[in-house]
Image (cartoon, rainbow, N blue to C red; front, side, top):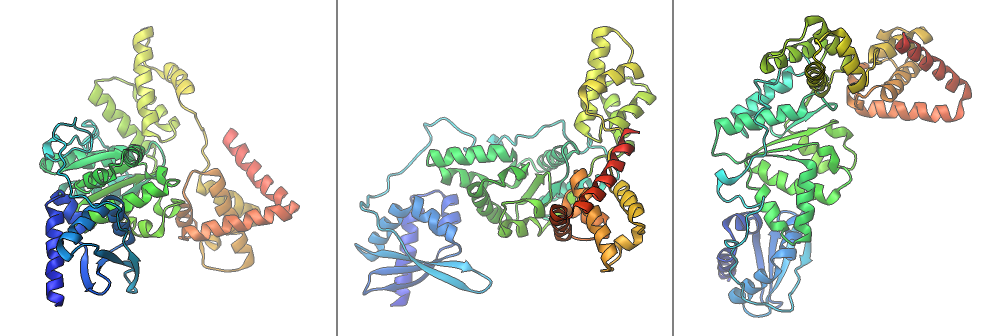
Length: 471
């Protein structure tokens, strides 16, 4: 009898398959596992791998499922879901499916007469990858600050989805070249594998598309489109931190692509551990491939970037001007390019030579110059000298009170006066993790609230920083 019930369920799936696309069937119905049929209650029990699939089926396909059940098992057949809520511990939860008031035979749908949208991508060559063809590996100049991410990115482009670097999560401050790098991965992947569906999308555009799909009741089209991508590249994902529904939807898209061996590339201005509002289930997936930091380029790399731009654009800029720009543009690739473009514009309009006088005028107007940006080394030197403690003691594992205090002060001031994420500060101060930095900052902040002498002491140290920056 159980076998015949299983055959009835297979017939139910067959009816559903005839009324949806193959992609929809494989995504939402193929994972369903038949458990049993209770003749007394006329109830079919099926298991689904996650609560999300249950919610999606109930929201978009409840009438189709009810119609198929009626045709296979008989009128008034009910459906019960067994949701896998904790796969590791084998925990499940049974939920009754909704019974629609009206069960109509499904009507065949066609979008043939509709205008194509960004989500209509049935034919691979019709998909616009949204890539900038100028941002390639050839134009991405290699240096100490980007050697690892660039090497990994090229490996991914050569074998998308086949390396251990999936997903590839790259982070770093604004202007360090993140967008260029992930764009280059897409350009090279598309060049090597023209038939692959490669897509670059900003986090903001993804969120706008998702919001529109919810409003227009086309969320299934949205999800199915993104689940058809072979190389998905998403920029600035920190913008999703306050959008839980967008994150939940991306989680299931991510999970689907990852299980199919599709390549995922993500970029952010901070590491995963510092993405507030992102659930652990997504953070653990971000961390299962490779997380790489793109640091701001040092002076030598800035010089190399400027020289490469001059060669590419046929510009002639004196070496001392190149050096001056590299030293004053705050390590931002965007600032470097902006200064050069402004220089050429001023030179042409005013018919003046590109010299130090002109570059000083341009930089003063276009770049916020920090002549002596504060570094971790500056902070360590000042704080250690103030308390008469060596840096080796600060870096050590010692729990002596005086060493712990200096270590916490250094971490607090680094968090306050530099743009580094907590994870990076921890690495530079004795190889600690980000949680140690956050705890140290919290401890110092609490002490500042109750200890006036300590407030004055810290102000004295910070004033010494300001004197150095003004020199």
